[in-house]
Image 1 (cartoon, rainbow, N blue to C red):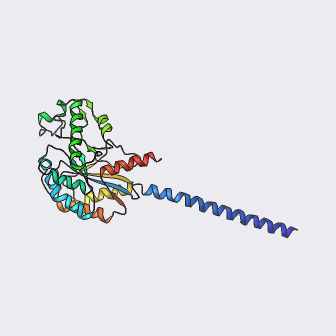
Image 2: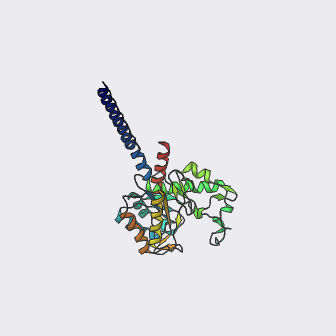
Image 3: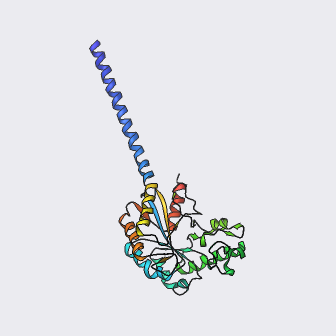
Length: 281
């Protein structure tokens, strides 16, 4: 009787151990997809990168778009109807949109705060201190109508000219929120999927940085699982804020080589993704 009792206890012990082992395996398996998702939160990648180009420069059409297309990368071009590189090449911008790039709203006349330091170049008529809220809203709405006539799209993102978000003392961010799914600012910062402010999306203004410096920003974004937005003006010239063609190429080549870990997307696609991710929780 004692031997039988000991054998029964032993069997019960093994059964209990087996149940605990199975339970542990199930818990690990259940946790693994969540951990994997958190580690690669940006469409299955470690981080997201948006390449933005401001002011409808000729060099964007001549130098940037061909390189992006050759690598299969998409960019966001924030166009202002006031600039010669837009007015003279409307058909080419339409072709850019057909290739899957985003034509973003950058207003009609690129109004900025004229009294800010270093803003002597702002024409008095396009000084935000002389605008009314209605005037800036009308200008933004008409810029979207202009872009829709070019690309046929009704949804796009916005970029605050000079990063300025006030008409005098009055913010127009609320109107931007009503009209767009997201807006880019000019403050150099990375933001995670949970922390990103869709109406003050940080960006790194590029002027003279080397390819290695820009690649380091992407690697930092990978480590932080963050969104990294580049803000380009001149690429190989045409603007005082400029990056050389070789350095721009180094960044794009790196992004192509790391596309399994880095999601390169338009600003519109990123804003949609953030919104959907938040709504699914």
